[in-house]
Length: 100
Image (cartoon, rainbow, N blue to C red; front, side, top):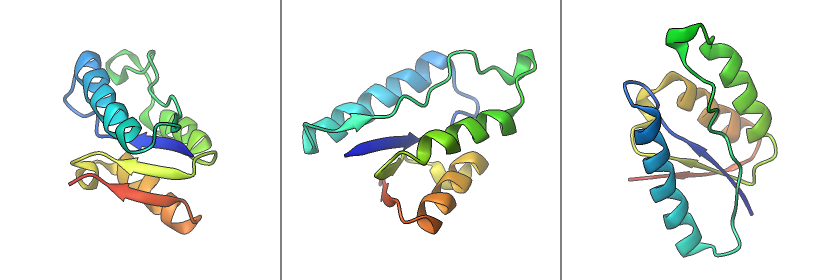
């Protein structure tokens, strides 16, 4: 199964985001050792340097289209991009897992 991780990035450093992703990946792999994680973290994303969030959301949605499962990290419901990814997954029949 291919997993797409949706996580809030607001007010987090790149290092904090990566650390959270690694924890999520470890949890997924503990449940599904054959899981394939879609790499949806964009190293070059920095809205302070002119990156347009909507363009990166569009890139994320393109990757989400290849997923079997959307894993929504804790706090997803407070992030506009995560909410859009969640809505798209539901609308297009992608299984959704919400972290408690």
